[in-house]
Every structure is written in C-alpha cells, then in structure tokens.
Image (cartoon, rainbow over all chains, first blue to last red; front, side):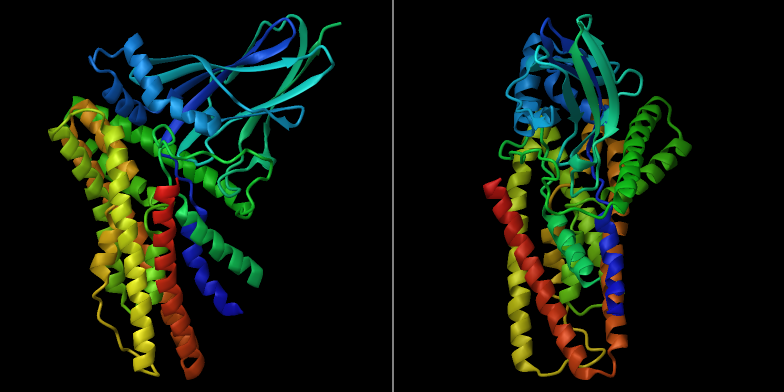
Length: 195
Length: 301
C-alpha cells in the first residue's frame, strides 16, 4: 500500500482551495424593539478591486456617487440575486435555523473609492417567554466572496435598555463550509427582558 | 488508509467540479440549506488553518495590487512596476490553486496519456495563458464596443464559452476512451519508452484554458476603471505566468508519479500493464465525466 503516497502531491493543490474573488468587511448593528430583537443592520465594505468594477458599471454619470436611480440599478444588478444565497447570512434562534425571507432599506454608496452596501435584515425574536439565544454568521458558502468582520467596530447594539444582553464571538465549527475547510465566526447573543 | 486515499481522490474530483459563479450576478444558482454539518464531504480538519492562511494571503495580495496600481498611475517607476510583476505572479500561483483552473483535468489527462515532462509544462502554460488571454479578449471586446455593463456581459459571454469548452472536454475524454479501447485491441503489450503521438494535447489545452479567468477579469476591469489598461495587461500576463506555474506543476507531478509507478513495477510486467491500462482508461473517463458534469451544471444551474 506504500505506493499510494506517490499520489499525495496531486492532492495537495486541491486542499488549498481558498479561492475568494471578492472580499467584504462586514459589520452588524443589532437592533432591539420593545419586545425583543428586531433585526440586524448590515454594512458591507467591499475590496477596492471589486468595488471599482461595480462602480464602473453602475455609476453611469461617473460622478463618484450613486444617486437614487443608480442605487436601484445596483440593487437590481448586483444585490437582489443574493436572495438565493440568503444574503450570505446564517441565523439560528435557540438552535433553530431562521429562514431569511426579505431585506429592507437597501442602500449603496461610494466611500473613498470603495463600495459600501447597507441593508436591514428583519429577525423578530420576542423575549417575553424567557431567555433567547441568537447566533448570526455572515459567509458565502460558495466562497466566491470572503466575508470578514470589520476590524474596528464589527458589531454594535441599539435600543437595548429593556434587556440584559450577553454576547461573544465564537468559531462555529459545526457550520464549517466549503468542504469543511472554512469555519465561520459567529456572533452569539443571549438576551432576556430586565425584571 | 485505503479509505482515506479513496475519499481524498473523491474530494479532489468533486472539488474541481464546483462552479465558482459570481453570486452577485449568476441567476440560476440557489444555495443549499445551511444545516449544521450539512455537507457530507469534508476535508480533514488540518486543512482549515492552511486554507484560512491562503485566503488571507490572497486578500492582502489583492489589496496590495490595488494600491500599487494606483501608485504606479500617479508616478511612473520601474521599481513599482517590478513589484507589481512580482505580486501578480504570486497572485496567479495562489489563484490557480483554487478550483476551476483545470488542475484535475490536467491530472486526468496526463494520467491517461503517455508523455514527457516538457509537454507537461507546455500544456500547463497553454492553459494558464489562454485562461488569462480569454479574459483579456472579452474585456477588450467590451471596451471597444459597448463600453458598459462589463460584468454582466462577461457573465453571459462566459456561459457560451463554458458550453463550448465543456463539450470539447467531454468530447476529448470520449475520444481518448475510444482510442484506448482501440489500442488495447490492437496491441497486447505496451513497450517501455514508447511515447504515443501527442495529437490531443493542443485541443485539450484549448478546451480547458478557453474559459475566462474571473480573477484576471477583475484585475483588468480595475485597471480599466483607473484608465491604466496597460498596467492591467502587464498584471494579467504575469498572473497567467503564475497560473501556468501551478497548472504545469500538477502536470509534471502526475507524469513523475506515473514514472515512479513504472519503475517500482518494472519487473512485474503483467501488473505494470494492468495499472497502465487503469490509468489510461481512468484518466480518459475522468475527463469525459468531468466535461459532462460541468456541461450539465451549466444547464441545470
């Protein structure tokens, strides 16, 4: 059986299939309402190269800004299709998969030469019935896009005064994707109503 | 150990079939559910750290290339240009390690065909350069014609090219299979040092390399948006050289490994003959099957 080791060199390049073409720095604003979690506001900052291709294509008047009409075109041409990819977002509520149906308030802008997307992803979780645990990770399962947490302020919380909140960033090994090679980093939030 | 080997081979093949379409644009694709441990196939855990590091390397190379291109636009400098050449070469080497750059097909081809190292390098170079040249041609056609909607047009043009390419790959696989059957019937033994004609190498390299490289397309469109297409073309050339290096390495490794087999089994003539037949038929069948699966993937989505 020793001869099988001869084959190992062929397999090495295939192991290293890290192959993203697009890079996103992602930050999330976790928004609460009176009863519990309301949803997540995403901000995606794209890498300069991919940004330039989209800007070149959609900033039709080349003024370095997206106007309302151009934003609609960006949404139609380079965002809406992500519905099929759950907008790269994976949410579980108390261990159960949350089905992403829609996003709201999509906005695209050009900031210092790079493209930035903002959108709100509704995910209502009522905390009346006790403590809740919500896990959110942002990644592209096809690995065409590599999504990483933004380094300065990867996440923040809004309207939290009614709740006791704990959170941590975990390596969610059970969600390892792209043939188990990439482990996503998930934000795990635990919250309950203040007495 | 046997199971490990078989499963590795399986991943190797399956991995190459993953169509890396742009999720922002590709209309057909719908992603599978995100279940815990949903994937039935997975690499061993030890690859996770390597994959993560390679991804970070790609990210920093991508960023550095963007910065350097902008810098070179501002001030003409030979030093900067050489730095770009170096970065793009490394970017090409790393980029071609990912799926969709013909490595499995190259492996299968050289498994099936009797050839030498020089031709292994040649096939890798043709695939690498054609892969980038195809991207450059599409970008230039769009630049000189409609001058807009580059990404969307390239995406739809790529689809047609993929259909042609995958059909050719499946056809070549089928041709090699038939040729092997014919050879087996014609001769009972294969003489050592005998190298068969290399007629199918050029069509094979063309069929595999003709698909435009998305990485090169993005580099070109970036330089186009800055108004420095020349720098983009230079970058693409050296990126192609990097990709050619990776793909050639796979070809050469395959040929060397096959030679090792022959040397190990030099005295066991019958076993040697059977193994060579397994390689020839297996390689040809892999080329045919991959071409067919990829072609099916374009239509099914």
